[in-house]
Length: 264
Length: 264
Image (cartoon, rainbow over all chains, first blue to last red; front, side, top):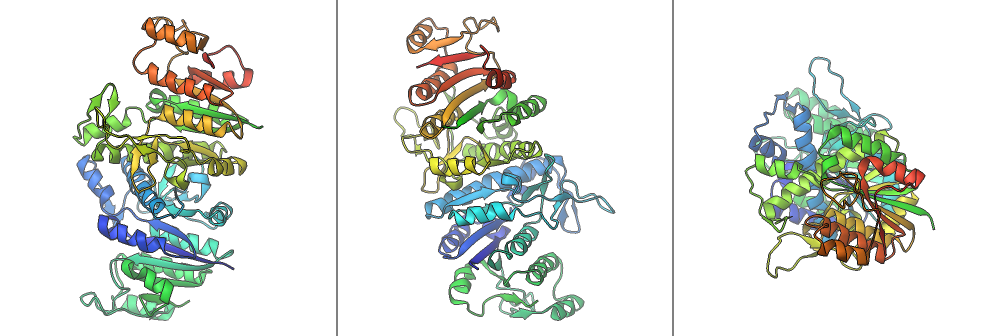
């Protein structure tokens, strides 16, 4: 099986023009087949503020009302996605920007309102990922660049967590490719001590993860990220790493002991 | 050669949710291979207003400064494009939304500032259209949906006239397909008398066009539209029609004497 690098890039890099450009330079040098998934950073929140649209948050998650969905679709699937694609094209990477609606690449199910109504938020399910379409692109030498906007197949766009999309892509595509999933963010990995940027935990097993949760070392936004990462490593991905964006190329090219590696 | 319907849909339909949905229903019933190109309507102007970004216009054309380019990219390539794609997916059309940057589908050249600096505006050239990519999509049963955002190949997104994109696609793809180009807008065709919505001119030859220009019957925004239409019919398109959006399906299915047909 061919190797496929799936790279998720988070908000902090998106928000910084120079950091993003440096990252895309590195990404363009990956020789394996590759897919990029990007978050939206603060740009959607900033635009909502400028437009006077208030953003309800529950448990650190944005409630996506109709107006917020319009804003995130514009910012993620339009502004950011097309800028990334144009930049990659200039680096001779034949990138194509995709939402889940495009080519029915990723179909999700609107989350049912149980205690909280998250609004227009889509959750992935077993057959969410259109493996045929994405494989066709990869075989044609086209590099998919996903924003975190999906659809329900009935004409409704939905907001979906970018980490979850990355995980779902990794699992689905692991049937055809040897998948390495790389969660890039602003820190060097999962930290033992949040005050010490060098206290990277090199490996996390499922058992160790439970311990880290109990000890409160992993908390808040890191919990869903690690849940997504474990879902990928336990369901087909060959390797899953959480690492700093600037370390990506070193990690892939030299396979150094960089970042936090998950053990199934 | 297979028949290919290229359909341009303008602002008035985009601005009206019900009209857009009805149009997409009709578009989805076209049995030939098909491509949709959409303008942006008033949504970009509205968003710019809400954000307090002033819009300079010269000769009826928007000057695209950096802030305006960001807005049009968000609105055209993000908000409108993805909503259209999601809607078509719900009608079992496997649509894919594309800017010119995606897959390097349409590369343009930034317009040089001679008397007026139009800003980030891209003009098509001879090899602007990536015929291989678009043909591949069509053969895969995928329906491209283009917004009017292109790129220069050096990382710069550019605003491009949607009528011009439709014309360029028609010309380039006429080498592989029998192309019918349909410019859909709010009127029944080119009118002899702008006060009489039924005074449709059935056919316009190049000679007649010159006369209509001299007589002031064709003016303002209709001039670039007709220039684009003539460029298509004189350079390979099998037929070019200017018609009302609600007449599209009748025109294609019954080939009735609908709209204004251009004669090379």
